[in-house]
Amino acid sequence: MLLSKERNEKIMIDESNIYQAEKTAGSEDPHKEDHPAGGSSKRVQKTFLQRNKYRIRQICGVAFLLIIITSLAVLITKHSGSEIKSGDSEAQAFAEKTESATQSTTALTTTTTTSQSTTTSATVTEDTTTTQQTTTTQSATNKPQTSTTTKAADNKDPEVIKPTVIKGILVVNKSYPLPADYDPGGLTAETAAAFNKMQKAAALDGIQLWICSGYRSYYTQQSLFTQYCWRDGVAKAETYSARPGHSEHQSGLAIDVNMASSYFDNTPEAKWLAEHCNDYGFIIRYKPGKEQYTGYVAESWHIRYLGDVELCKNIEASGLCLEEYLGISSKYSN
Image 1 (cartoon, rainbow, N blue to C red):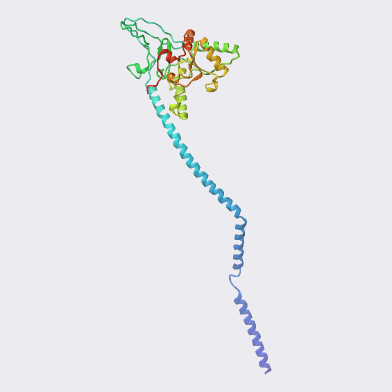
Image 2: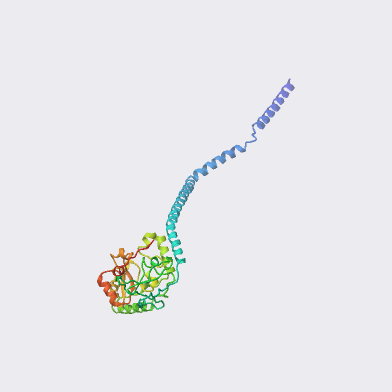
């Protein structure tokens, strides 16, 4: 009995050990290490999002703002491009028309004397180019005497452009152009000498005068006018700037004094110039209230050399502009 009892106790101890071993083995989870790690990862990820929540919002906000700005920039660029294209088309059309007119221009010519006529010489004050004017004897019908040097519209060949001289005055305006190759080489010698004399007289009165713009070639005027058309449109540009061939500056007889700007108006220099320029053979070419005759806005700084002091004073006393005084127009034909 004692042996059986000891045997039974030993068996029970062995079974207990086996059961404990099996329990221990069964309780081991092959993914035991994964669970704590997975939980820790989720906690770390959640903590990172909480800690950087404000920064993430900032990044998202900046990205959204950049998208909006980029979209606006694209819309503005497209809109501006369409406006520029619209403005350029008008200027480009005029430039093409001007280029066509340039190609058709021929050299300066003079007319011949007709039979039973008397020839008189009317020399335009220039240093390199002299235009001969021939006049015909008045007929029995007493028709008024006119210059035989005419603008292109008066010629049989519309492609020929000639300078126009009326009453001994070379006329350059919207109605009467100069050919593209008309080039006195700068201000005429007589024009420059008269201005220098006037400049010295002004200095004695404490007035400083200088040349802002003198001679401009056909092609310089073409470039300037095209720029003004791009900037302000053709219609507005033509109120203050001439088409190439129609600028008095090409004649070498016109000068812009001090500044080509309305800021010159009513300055002591402008007042002195208006009062004394006639004494040196100049006139203020474009005066206020004469826009319908000259075709340009008033320019207190633009003087034109006529050479004849008496003529300048007569024009000034008449209160007329040059177009009114000569009875001519200043309008483009097209």
